[in-house]
Image (cartoon, rainbow over all chains, first blue to last red; front, side):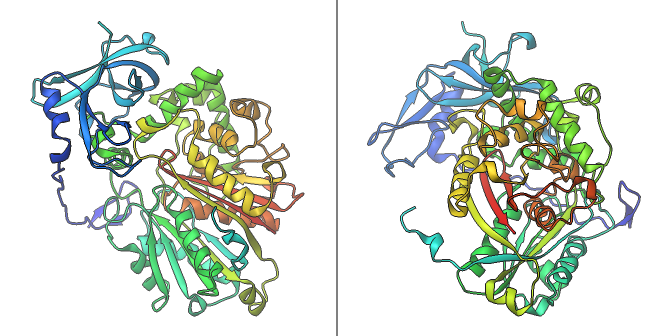
Length: 147
Length: 398
């Protein structure tokens, strides 16, 4: 028996650690592209719809005939937030800014916005989507200042 | 709509409603908490558990933030409902409304005469940052959380920055929603947060996900709510004096990825669900006497005013500034304290709204000072799952 934060008697349930393996076979060119500094996505060969995130199947025309293309990365920020209270697995990160940017290609991307001073972050600001591998080996893409 | 289905369905009434005390409820298990809502609902209806033919349980966190993986059957056994038809419904923070819709359809179709919709959530059995993690994952995990740690306040904060940029909405406008809803929660004995707050306190509270601060966010709450639904025949059989009729029901979903939305100044799923509900009830928004809207964050209430048609797009801030959503205003909203202060046990919320509106339509609001004046005897519940990932709008009529 232990005590809950409200000091009432409780039993501790058995602990389970869960980290599912997420299949990326069908979006592999995206993850591989990031390592080469490219942000890739898919376009439906049948109806022409461009997707982000990349998909193997077209929800518009139900075709599975997709082609890969590299995104320009040129974006305009449409919404953002500075996240202070972070989830458990992000506790070691400094507070971060998450933004939604609309790309030249007409699709939108959710990613961190970095390299900007807080006072400079506004709806309508121009940003560039950049892909890289972090020092600890994570493949990542973020919005940064345009070149 | 291809077929005019709504004209074929049977009339359905809410004949009983119950709600537990909301708050940090480490004194009860999920089943014990559900019972606190179930028993008063059954007594209110004047029926027994054996009269209930179908049960829909709304709950979202089973096996994640509380220990039971199959809570529907845990709850039904505890409430003496074994033998009834049973399902668990999940629609994120609209799981309660999903359960209500399922129970409604069971009665409206003629399949059963009496059904129970019960929502329950136990959210305080794990630590807060793990909860922030679980709820943050409840969008599109791979593309929004895995690399970017987007939190739920973060999702709505992005809508706030977009709304502020487009319509000049201010942090003070957001604070006004918190001030109003805390005021009504202080007048509601079942509410989780019963303290009043000032605009200054709200504005100076710690930033959670800018521009949202602590007082812009609903608390993490345990709670349960239940309603009994009945056919016209059952209303007569049980001699129900004051049935509250379900006049309209609408539901719609948005995209999982926020990046696939058209804009961030409203929730399209709300607009679609509301249109369906208004059409089915044959009403317009201006004749609604009282509404419970999904104010998990203050910006959500302002967007709901607009998306539900209580004002034009962009005029939500004006409505709160003018006090039009207070008791006695043009359209009283969340006069039970809302998710913001009454609390948001996510599987229970949608049904807790219907509990409140049933009481309001009967003229039985507790405390009396927050009873709205009834002119058309029409009430509206708006329950969102995720950030417009799901939406249910329900219109009740006495």
